[in-house]
Image 1 (cartoon, rainbow, N blue to C red):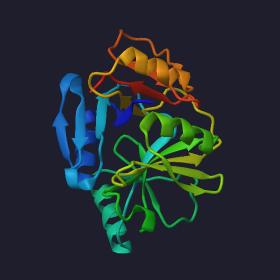
Image 2 (spheres, rainbow, N blue to C red; image 1 turned 45 degrees about the vertical axis):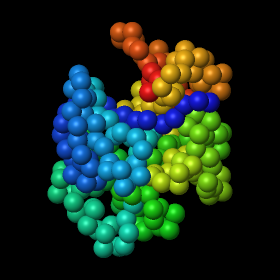
Image 3 (tube, rainbow, N blue to C red; image 1 turned 90 degrees about the horizontal axis):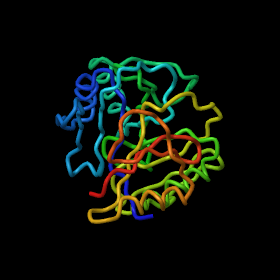
Image 4 (cartoon, one colour; image 1 turned 90 degrees about the vertical axis):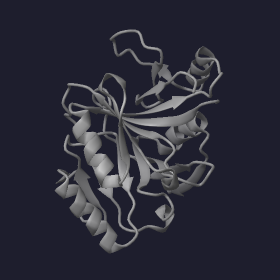
Length: 243
């Protein structure tokens, strides 16, 4: 498919608060866009090739997110520093049933879960964000769909538990699909956006994505220039206009 990953989007009751938290935690820059949207952008040296986008949505978070970020650390001391910084900025420790693990599970000021990982060789060159992690009942099948959608090949497997995609450049975060049997409940508050390249036919790109296994998502509301679809496990995503 002729699309690429362009955004990770987070619904936010207070976009400015979440954007400030993540910009400060990651060392990135917050940029105010139209209609209350705030984008947090990484420096080019970080390797993160998409925007972290916070959009105003009044609904409150009620269930664990199916997509979350894992942050990379370089040393145990660096991991501890990241955890301390997140807590100082307004984050909280949360228990999602992780038990005794070497990573730390936290939540941002609106309850969105994320992990601060212990140092791992696989994430040594990712920059601040090690991975975008997606819960999946069937990681292999869902990873195959997203590999086609993003052009990112499979570069890691951990049995039948995890499948990881990586950008062909070898820079930036992984996109990982982690086995989780929880049933999806309601619209995801965190989703991915893809877009065809400038000059492409948007309708043709959407048709190709649907033929690959996506389905239209009926979320109501006004007509939009982009198309909202769901992946084979019901996760919403957007096919934006060419860019």
